[in-house]
Image (cartoon, rainbow, N blue to C red; front, side, top):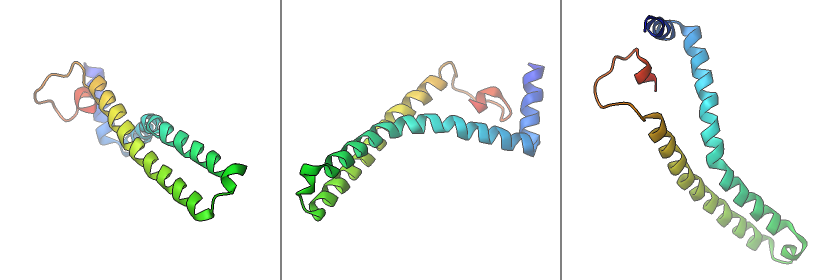
Length: 112
């Protein structure tokens, strides 16, 4: 327990350590955001491929742009829905075992 207290004191009182921990957390946060973006990227990729092939070239430019914009809007909503599901699941998993109550600011429970 003393090791945990020393570590949390080091993190909360040292700017370089705070900066390093922040960068690590940004890196870890990029993973679920990337997972949430994947379905949207697939929709946009499929839309771009479908609208750039030869048969689609017979459609007017305005129609092709309109269809692509509709797919872009759909992919945005897909990102929001996927983000809600993924982030909600991760928060639920991370908070397993934490009981309601008050915890000190400098604790592992607060960091979780």
